[in-house]
Length: 144
Length: 144
DNA sequence: CTCAATGCAAAGTATTTGCAACCGA
DNA sequence: TCGGTTGCAAATACTTTGCATTGAG
Image 1 (cartoon, protein in one colour):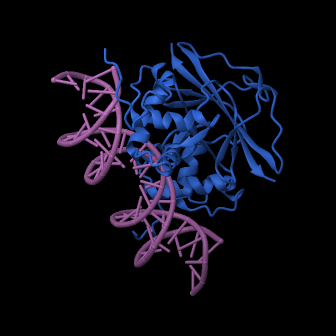
Image 2 (cartoon, rainbow over the protein chains, first blue to last red):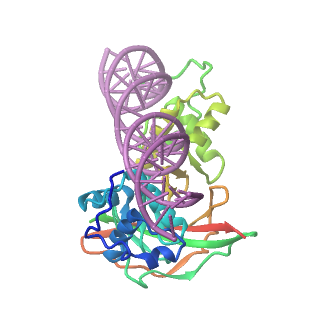
Image 3 (cartoon, chains in turn red, blue, orange, yellow):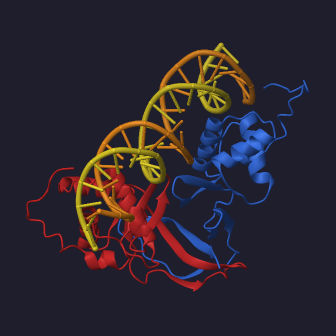
């Protein structure tokens, strides 16, 4: 849209290119910006809306639709993982391995459960013709 | 009290009154009909849309909104349990105890995993001020 | 230069809600 | 009769999509 030919303070070669490149995604400005927000702050669990809010707060000029599309692209590229816990809301997790989550029913937030706090004594056999893709564990917490 | 001495075309005494009464829900015609569909066929995992479809097929004259409201009422009464597995779709389970589910990614169906197939060797401690309400386990199956 | 990526807004899907008519107790 | 329920349709929330413009390689 705008003519941006002035070498601003944005070093565009310096984004999380490696992270993006791992999945063969072209490192555009928006993707770099979102990737920075995602991997910059440790493990995160956020919704598209929340990420869009952060992008807006940081004046990144990323539209909500692009946030949705980008999160989806990251997910199918294996860079993020979807967590479905509440009806009508998808959370994205920057950790992509199988791990359990705490869900605080009081405020709808999500957190990683302590590493190793959940261990399986047994897992079911996958039915014929299938294999286990992942095992999602959600520990729902209620205020006592 | 009134004695029901007019056996008209509405066999209203013959629904799952006990099931409904357990939660203090008034056994209306629609609720009885839906309850019959729900508990009549063993353990079920279905969406509001699916249940509405069955009700329509059986000429029960229950509106979609009522199906939603009824499922919600049943759930908060503890007669059903919500399962959130897919974004934008809520399944209801006629089994209300903590138990693991298989989710077939290929067609989006849900099934109970074999009883006892999942056992925990350890569970996390609930953070301060909270207690564990439930532990949801979803085994996602992919076609091999 | 070329084609994928973006932005906007409109379309879609799943679910909820307001309010008048209805029916079970 | 009385108040909880129902039904319809409009409203809401979240997410996806179409299409012209933009920008990375």
